[in-house]
Image (cartoon, rainbow over all chains, first blue to last red):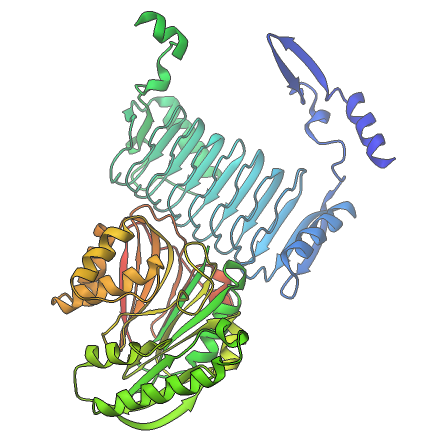
Length: 281
Length: 311
């Protein structure tokens, strides 16, 4: 019955309105109505209500279940002690909460988030922040490869170095790296912004469709169809403001960062559909 | 998937058997089929440690004759060692089918290895002054307990937990691989080599032998071949990154060095912790945490990177 009640509530909130305009499009949220910016089943938490969780002896499923339990009990600020580089911690949180990991995370940490503000005092392994929709994740030390894969929204920030394929398939949001990145960063990027304050590895932005990459250090080389774009005042202002938000600065100033965009010369930018090509030929 | 791990103490000895067991056990989820250890102990001058087996673990479960055959095969190995002038100082039965001998031998090591392996079912796991290579089916704790590795003292070690994808679940296909016929060189690998057969044929033409169809064995043989032709460890490793095709991260150890190499795509994981007197590296940070439970600074080596540390 609880599920039925939730569905009922979501209909009342207007979350299942379909607008038909050639394609079926579901409109889940209205930006005009701030109340709609939370899922109907999201626990109501008080950010002034603190909880601490020592997870040294807990497995990853139990840790995630404990975080959810605390949120259900209204705790809006949760500190997780001794995460011990366990995998898949802090994943699938679809509501607002301040979550602090006192230590390091393993692989797939903070994936599938939609709303929370997460800080990690240590390091994160591969695929941190994968598919994040909204919220912020701030990592104080280094990150592994595929950092922010397929991010769709929010800010994912690592103050140290990260590995290869950073922001692969990025679809939105902002990825900020305080140090260097490995090869194939921004591979097949589609939207959003990536800021690399240090050096970028080879094949940067390979096959990117859209989006913008800013680099403060040296670029080993650009990938296919990635080209240098013109820095504008809007870029500089946005960079300065966004970096200051996380206590970061471009090493040589925002005005000297290099902007990389898609050259849009690949075959997929051809306006003709395959069937139309046949007609032309 | 597979998990690999390595550690090296600089300028001191430690219980590397226990440390590596803990690291590999925490990587069990990456490969539960078999576990292997290459442990570098404190060598005695002039002595070699010979680790060999005369049957697979699986063989011991089949047939009534295998137990007698194991005894016969071991006796034949002993006879051949004696024939070539290797002096057996002491012998230890690690399992019913795997043995640890201390020998002295001044002759051609390749000839000795070939002659011993010509005995049916016999495979030399390692010959070394410092190296002892142990591998069997089961997780790290099972293998470590079975072979009594918990008290093994030494300077460095590498190990592997295997998820069989390219070849059988048997000891032959388990890692580490000894870089036959070189003393004290061993390799563990996570990944796939796509030009395996081409290089294998080339190595076989040069006279190298392969005991398995596992692509990881090629790395050990490749490095042995390069070093036989005069390259040092680091040069051989750098060349391997250019010449071996596929996705891989591998760890190699010699009598006094530990090295790692990553392919140019950096498609396989490796996390590294380095302090003044200790280096630990593994497929996942949880393995390093099993040795260092407190907060440490770790990082991922980058694409195409080759690193070597001295004990």
